Length: 175
Ligand SMILES: Cc1cc2nc3c(=O)[nH]c(=O)nc-3n(C[C@H](O)[C@H](O)[C@H](O)COP(=O)(O)O)c2cc1C
Image 1 (cartoon, helix red, strand yellow):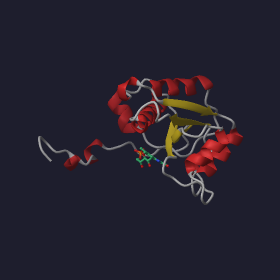
Image 2 (cartoon, helix red, strand yellow; image 1 turned 180 degrees about the vertical axis):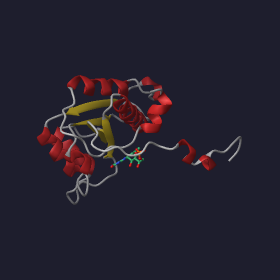
Image 3 (cartoon, rainbow, N blue to C red; image 1 turned 180 degrees about the horizontal axis):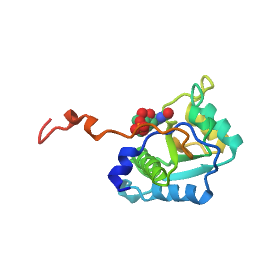
Image 4 (cartoon, rainbow, N blue to C red; image 1 turned 45 degrees about the vertical axis):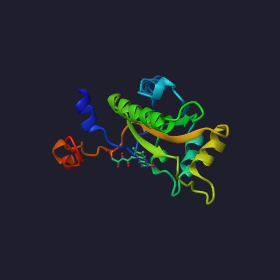
């Protein structure tokens, strides 16, 4: 598949089969994150690859209503940013997640972005970020942008339709 075909067929996958995902594949996905554009090339992100099913199950409680995709995910890749390194940390972490999501699809894997920043956890009064921080032992001061749930797809949503893109949002020369 060329890149455009990959982009058209990439969808958020929230249900995965029981087939394991190899450590090599997960590391490759993180390498794709590290190949992303980032402000001033300061690379303010770090990544935690979680494969322990018990930990993945705990992470599901880090979003209000529980994160349904983590019920079957074989891995979660958590994206942690250091805002003291770069003022584009949030954008850099988002670009990293985007790269991972698309690259996972190129490997035939399904994945879904799970937002943590600015979101509540399943426990009242505890933010999603705080919940992930406690479970994974992430020091105070680091931003927890979100995570990518990963597994072999157990659902196949329709590809995007290029003809249905909201082209009216394109302005030319002026707003
Ligand atoms: C910044 C961002 C945050 C997202 N957070 C979540 C989330 O918390 N839970 C979820 O199920 N999907 C999440 N998604 C996935 C979107 O819901 C999904 O990309 C969108 O509905 C379009 O569908 P598609 O990815 O299949 O094209 C997020 C995506 C982005 C870019």
